[in-house]
Length: 437
Ligand code: SF4
Ligand code: SF4
Image (cartoon, rainbow, N blue to C red):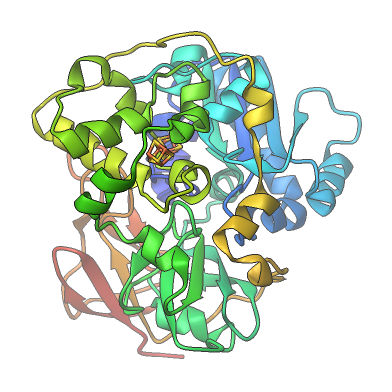
């Protein structure tokens, strides 16, 4: 069967980023297929362990995408210090020449798609463009494992999640899609103190005020951060305009440290700060704002005054987009010759974030958690919500299709992650409760 149909039927979307439907992403011709195993967000441990345990599936997945896209090169990108994963992949590849390993330094944000593309090919993805504009398809390594599984007829009904931070036993667990974060937290023995929570990593993840939230196919981490920790305040989206106006000295350190700006994409957070503080309209030369990937480096690392240029960038980006202005395809200028020196070691970032004590292993447990109730979100990433194909009261089996792609839209199929009865359908999710153990 055609790979795009196999992938579509399995309900695969990008496991490591915004959740773009994979069957659409791979439906193209490309020169490079790149596997993203950088996992640069501090404290997360999913991809590095998935590459170790499922090295053969990562290789099988990338070979399938390489063949499907007619790519000349297939390259698995991971950090040099993921020794176990490197060893496992080398053991699978032996002397094969059709798939290469590309070893990255331990910097942040090495896992940014644009950085990976540049690191391997020396090409810059334009603002308003995609890696495909420069001949590349980039897939997360867990997505490639899902592709390998799909070739065996398996659906995406489980996800690996690292549970870290102030928890008793940091761990990386396999969980059914739709399980609540509360149950996932219990797998780590609960917290050691009163905490707030981040879904994802400390830089790009989002703060949540409840754990009554289901795991989706893109959830990679749950971090418990002690209440009052500076990271929590820095992540809050509230912008103190008065402080910003009084304190920002326009030193431009945020811009000098911006990895996307260093690629020549004209991402200038100091100008965004100036714009918001003074009400100056900078849209004319701010096309580059669309290239801000919200990595947070400007906020968590560059600014010495505790300001939040990354949040300001997001605010301005939304304001510009709400006026109907879309990104122009452009590479503004040359790559900064000092790019190599700007790479921020993850260890230094962790220290700056005040998270050093939580930078510990979170061993992968390859036995799936069980639950009696799941809520399968109808939207887990880019595209339209999936359309329920079941009704309240229906009995469903694990792996059964329960929601399909809306006709003519971008989206993914959803499958039951446990057997049971459909007990609720809302505009956001389908709830299934187990009826037989
Ligand atoms: S936000 Fe901070 S780093 Fe950026 S220009 Fe202002 S003071 Fe400098
Ligand atoms: S969050 Fe800051 S450092 Fe990261 S891309 Fe955006 S402006 Fe640059």
